[in-house]
Image (cartoon, rainbow, N blue to C red; front, top):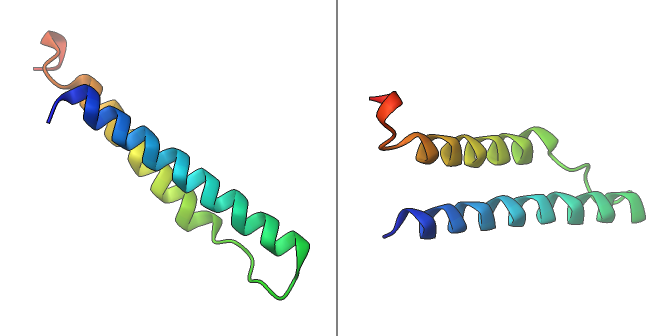
Length: 65
């Protein structure tokens, strides 16, 4: 798989995670019967995907060997 394709897939996962968090926030604000969103869970996944993008960006760079 090409590096650009991997970056695209990770960015898509970040976007989906942010969308899921927004959906959970909307449900919670509209109806308190829904549980409060798990911010730490979603932010942790977003942070992990962002870090993966940074590491992929560092790969095969001459100053990182």
